[in-house]
Structure formats: C-alpha cells, structure tokens
Length: 102
Image (cartoon, rainbow, N blue to C red; front, side, top):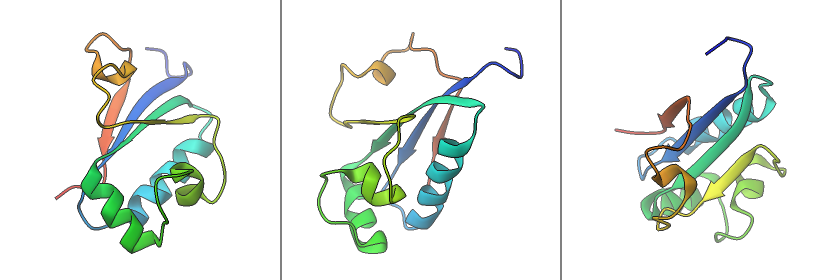
C-alpha cells in the first residue's frame, strides 16, 4: 500500500486500566489525515473502566464523552454485533490496536 493512501484502522479497548491512553490515541487518529476510518469497539468491561477512569455517564454518545466532541472518522461498533463490518475477515483493515491491554 502506498504511504499516502488513507488507512482504515480498528481500535479495541479492554477492561484494563489506562483509559487515558485510549482517549489520547483516539484524539490522535481523529486528527491524523492519513487515517480515513476508525472502527472503535469497547468490551463491556472496558465500558465499566471508562466510566470509572474518565467519569463517563452511560453509553449514550460514548465517543463524544471520550473525545469531548463528535467525530466523523471514528465509528462506534457494538461488541455484540457479529454482523459488524469488522467481524468479517474480508473487511479491509490496515491494522488493529488493542489499548489498553494487559
């Protein structure tokens, strides 16, 4: 893939501590012109940790709560949706980041 072609990334977060790293990564990829699309998936445990560490309230507008703003680039995917685009092995993705993880 040419270096100047936009990238599609998948970002997944787990129940590990370190939600601030997730927040900063999402803010960075949202600003990065090389990244076209980010599919974001949070486990149920991650949602609980995010609520504790970032003082989030519920799942409504989760990305807006994490980023402090909306994003056209980052798409929230349900961790229970086996029909999600990222659940398919043929979905074009340039990389996956699991953050934080332990």
